[in-house]
Length: 350
Image (cartoon, rainbow, N blue to C red):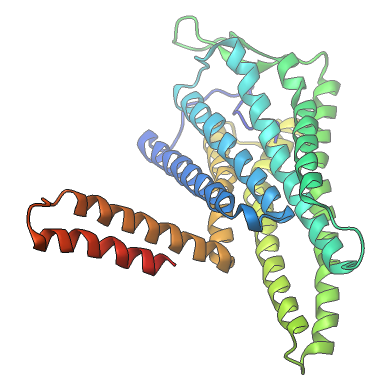
């Protein structure tokens, strides 16, 4: 995941696919990711009195996805299409640092969501994280993510590519300058284990135990429609939603992870003539995870759908009130129309 920026300096070849088509897909992904995640955070923030630990981690996940949309997609698209770096040395260091930190925050948020659900289901009478503890974990996640991404601040720089075959004057590439090849491979292997393999394995173990426990409870409560069985059904739906988030993340990031591993350890195995095309397709699939998370959360969470309906109804009522305010108040008929519409909206929203 460390080469999220398209900083594979060994290759600089023009794209094989039409620029407009590629730009369109990336722009659509960026817009959907921004709108979906901002909307998700706003909906959860409206329910402050009902906020829980899972909701806090979901917001943290959405915020990291927003950073990916802002600091990953635009720069990567421009770098890919222009085939050289135009943003200077500072952004050459800062952009991949933010990108790596955002991906780390995303995967660690998913891990802590899984751990929280595991504790809730496996040991319901035991310790449960409080809201304040959840916020503390969020802070620790960001500190750890920044520490993990710090090598990008030290070993990246914008410099002329080698060998130089550009037709642009003063062209540059965002290159990694490690003390040795062993240092670079050690760091990329660490990122592979810390950002992908390790977290997904831990999450898999957590949810396997959760589903085994829920299935055992279901066998005992199948014949009784008690409040406990209904609560278990609700918990099972939440777990399905969270597993869907994990699965989407794993599948979206798998091609780019494989691409980066092959590029680091055996770059000759990648076809040179299609290097940028392969990277762009893998990168676009990875970026699509920023759009999928709000969709999964929205479709599989009935409370979220209810909140969206309430927001849309509230916006519709405000629009009707504004339209009514434009009517003249000089006649009785207009006065009755002006006052009757808002009252109906208020009763509907309640």
